Length: 299
Image: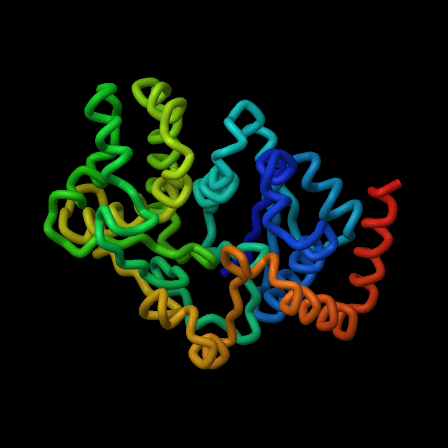
């Protein structure tokens, strides 16, 4: 499988850089994520835009095997849709792949092979109305504004199945046809003309990105596991961890050889120091490139 990363710079420049301790820590995370993963994958690929290429490839001198700047095509999208860079990248894959977030680090190989159809970090089960996933908020506005949702979402919500999303710190697999189809429908959910007013007035406390990327993915998986239309083989999903709790368990994370800096972990100064020390010791040339680039961009 290819190891794939994505960086759409517009959301980062608008507001997402503030989720990190500093620009230096963000760049060090990129170095560590790439250098660790390249040990386990034959090919490394970056999907980004022109600014991202200048920053990560020309500035930081990260050595991806392939760099694609098709995320320039997202320029007209609202910067609040930070997940669109990832979703666009999912839709572009023609070979088996694993997308790795730049704040995710692989210390060991992932338990995947050519038979792994769909692979994600972990399932994230939740109770509707009592979690940070708020599909009911979107659906209420959809009904009021006569908007549109994919049939898979609508079916999943009324199926009686436990509701979950797929945590996508790592995500991919060999069934690229299925993944492409899901990702294109995620884009349709964002871009559908009937939903224009929906996204314009949706309260910011509803995190639309994780609904369209992670919840819709679960809906697609469960719908097509229970319906025979469109796919020649049963849909199967595998995980690195069996639950979100397991993913946050230090012992289980160490056993799996996986670290993901979710939420406030990106601002944890102790973790930032650990990452900096690791990069300085194990990748001294990349570390110096990072310091040089930070100095240049401050001038």
